[in-house]
Length: 543
Image (cartoon, rainbow, N blue to C red; front, top):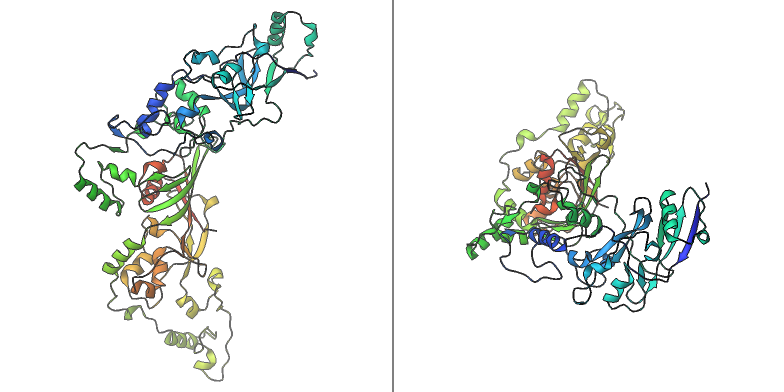
């Protein structure tokens, strides 16, 4: 059947239907305060001792007029708006459709002669032809109806347009003289009203980021249903980890996952504060140390300052495969002081390395005597040098990248410090994502400091120092920071080295369970948590 759209410009301004109204905003904000603190809302001031639990760190929010555009309003400011779907379905009497727009949906509480619920009137057979949002060119805001715009002091607004669409029948509005008959036919024929913003208007679409969790109970962990949290999750915009907002976090986690980060200690003293501050350096915050939480901040939607590093973390969730991913870029790390302390105490010289020394010349002579007529790389490792008058062939390679093809001559291989290193760490094999890199993974042959040598070549600890790094000065890549250091011993000897030129590789975590980077205090702790949860940990070179 032909689909016909009938455009009607409305000039009669009345109230509009309530799209998913939050019934108890005060309870919703109390839940938010209990998690984030009582000094993080536009409508409240800090109330000392309001809660017994120290709040967890939450994303920054703002009360400015442009926070709606930036997507970082505090919830008490944002939740006076509503994400309104732009299509009304007659048959179900519900608003549907994939497009939604942010609209002011409640009156200011300062207006004493207007009730807040005057903004909300259900659409029915008596008023469906004069329900329309309005747009204010002055403030660039859309109001759910003219009553709402009036109570916000807007005296010049432009009504939205709409058209009626019926998928199975042509509709001629001129045929109808009774609005009830029109309503009945609209229901019978599954018609819809589609609302359209005015020309030259600036409206805010409620776009959902597909890589974030923007619905409740996607994880199946929600224990206590709350309709207001359900609606706030769909409407509010201020990213919290892999969630569209903190309310989506509430309705996708169990109570134990939302538990306190640190309990407050009423007897917290300056001595304890100093003790805590000293332990931050070692990445071990004490359980009752509120100060430790302050060492971790959420600078913006994806930047975390831990006590050992600052990282940018972009999180995604694939609801189809139930896979969580965190893409981590280390922005800066505070490891110099700790390394200086460790190296000054542990950089012990190996007493004897004679047993590790190989006489390559003697080895080559034995090789030729046993019938190996092949020249190696060094000048004295030729057949003619060992047996004058005889010529040797060259079947092996002395090229710098000979190790890539397992073609190195033995003397070149002996001094070769490169190795094929896995760029991943996982208790479960995942051959599709298993990548290997040729990295400098051994200290120089004659290196004499046992601590760095063992850490470079043997350590399997999961921490910040065991992630591959690249030296930006020459673009050489190393298995870990220790391998880089043992190739720059002169810098260590002066204890005057910096790591400004050392770029730690990016890290990707892929997990069956959602991680909560905002709830750990050290990046090393996040890595260990990912390993304990059997995540696939992957390293990639920085750009």
